[in-house]
Image (tube, rainbow, N blue to C red; front, side, top):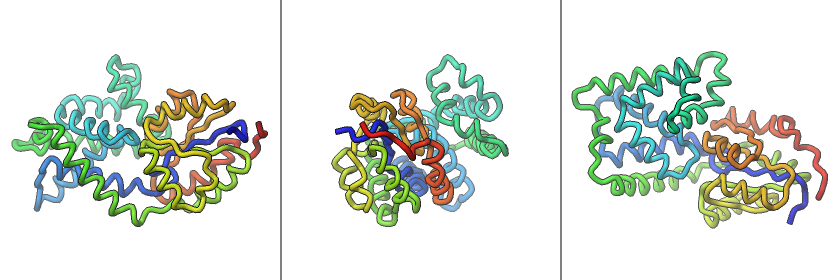
Length: 291
C-alpha cells in the first residue's frame, strides 16, 4: 500500500552494499579459470588480459551474469571488431551514438556518464590503453584470445565460470558492508518516501540479504529479477514519481526504459560515500506529500 507519492528504488550490490571492487576482481578470475588461460610467469600479459576482461565486463555491468559472460566471449573472440569500437569510443564517440549497429549504440549509452564527465581525459586515456592492449594481443602468434575464439562448448565454460564466480563472491561477501552513509540516508528518505530494493538477484536471496541489515524495516519491498520490468511494476502501483538509484550502466538503461529518474552511485568506498551524502539534495527528496 502506498504511503507516499514517490518511490525510491535501490539496486543492491555496488549501490547500497560496497561490493563491486571485489565482484569485478572475482568476475575476471572466474573467466580466466573457465577458459583455462595459463600465463604463469608473465605478469604483464596477465595484467593486460585482466584489463581487457574488465573493459568488457563494465560494458554490461549490472546485467544478469550470463549476459556479462556472453559479452566477454563475443568481444574477445572478435578482437578486430572490438578494436574498432574501442578506437571510436576513444576518439569519435558520436559515431557510436549514431551507429546503425545496436551493440555499438549500446556501448556508447553504457559509458555515457564517463564520456560526459571526462573533464580530465582520464576515461579517454583508459580507453586508449585498452586499444594498445588489444593490438598487442592481436599481433601475438599464440594469443590468449584464441581461447575465446575456438570455444568447443560455451555452456560448459559458462558452468565453470558460474560456479567459480559464485564461490568467490560467497567468500568475499563475508567482508561486504553497506556504504557508511547508506543507513543514515535510507532512514531519512523513509520518512517521506516509499523505498524498494530492485536487483537482479533472485527475490528470496535478495530478501534474506536485506534482512541482515538494520535498515531492513525501512524497505517496503525487495524485488529481484529483470530491473527494467520491476521498475515498470513499481510504476503500476500508482506513484507520481519513481527514482532508481544504481551504480552500473545496466541500471541507467533500466531506468530510461521504464521512464524512471536515475541517480548514480559510483562504486568504491570514497566515491560511493560522496554520492550518498549529496543524494537527497540532488534528487530533491527531502519533502514529499503523503498519498
